[in-house]
Amino acid sequence: MRSGGGRDFLRSAAWWAALVVWVAFVWSRSLATGEASDSQSLWVVARLRGLFGALGVSDVAAMNHLVRKAAHFSEYLVLGLLAFQASRPLRGRGRTASVICGLVTCCVPVVDETLQLFVNARSGQASDVVLDICGACVGLIVMHEVHARSLERG
Image (cartoon, rainbow, N blue to C red):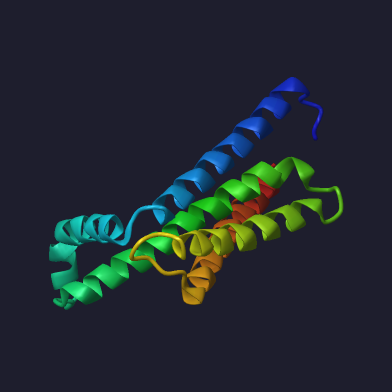
């Protein structure tokens, strides 16, 4: 940690708390029944119908699929952003920060999809794990670039 003492500790703790809350949110979505999850997706589809129409997508099942996959990617993009920030104080301590980011990035989606195996009308998908990891990696890369650019500016 830098020499900011208590302030740095509080900032780090806040990022870890945000990460834990976000993981709980993501996993809570996986515990929704298939019917509830589908209803939420269709609610989003109804609000984006004009956008889909402008893109030439008229099939509701295709819209629903796109919304669901975009939700996966987005949830995990945020997870990557938070994991980067939470592990930031550990940078410069060997590979600790990278290992933590890697574990969060890989383990959270595996647990997420495993949870769905035990929920009515849901299924765990290996393809969703891959999509989730891609979203988290994009979040990590974005934060790495933002951090690198802020260091360049001084």
